[in-house]
Image (cartoon, rainbow, N blue to C red):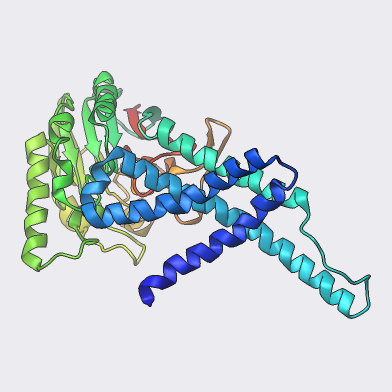
Length: 406
């Protein structure tokens, strides 16, 4: 019976929303009405097919582009239907109140029919939302954008002025289905001729083998003084039901090996002292640290920082931007720039460079995308190289960041 509850609920939900389409097509010809109804009911049929397909293939289905896109379009269709349902419920509440007023003799009694323009408006709004989501899938998920920032560091030695740092974050390789498009992002990174490349966590969605087929792409990233990386909350395998603790440990070791095979210097609560143009530069990397209780924290900045005190420039890699206000600003005032990711800019929002920026992410994270400053310290939050959940982006494009220190 429990297995029947969900399909019964979905069926009733579809029947309820279908009323808007009946109202919309009331004056249509039989032929066009049939086309509309067929398109409407094709969505739940496709949903059933995808559920059965996933039951057969399991996680292997997530590697098939057609399956991922079809699943997301079905989810987008139901989000759009939910919008219609909300409008219909408000209309029904008004119809009910009018009927109650009629029973009480306050107004002329009688049945209240649905108002056609309300249903038409709801369907138009829902179709617009669906079109935007589909556009984000097929146009934007590999549409890498270069963001440039110049950060003025107080007291920066003359020989370090102009240091070029490329940051990428949140690759989430388990979501990729097109290696050639991912390679375009790597080409964009290398075309900047960076002195340093920083990767700030979430290489995979859940398991290390998601990187198979992508190691020989990301190992092509080049930087004059090296590529440095850290772990994000998704890299620990915490969101997988492992058969035993040993399986989880082996997966983690495999992930560490992936970083090594790519030639990335993974820092686990450590730092590296680099000699750049004769000056000591500290690159500090902490494991995942979050001020939000729903994410496990493994980071130890005290341990990672120890021994870096004399560096003339201190650069911190920390996946979750909440770390900056929670500890970095108060306890480590000499860390010049913190590089974070994690938020993805929620993969949805509006950005007009230099004028306006909005995303639902702002209601969850105080620092959610771009550059922030507090006194002489800076935080840069990368919008993410990949995607998770929704296989696309709307307004918030996948990011490669070029930071120049001045």
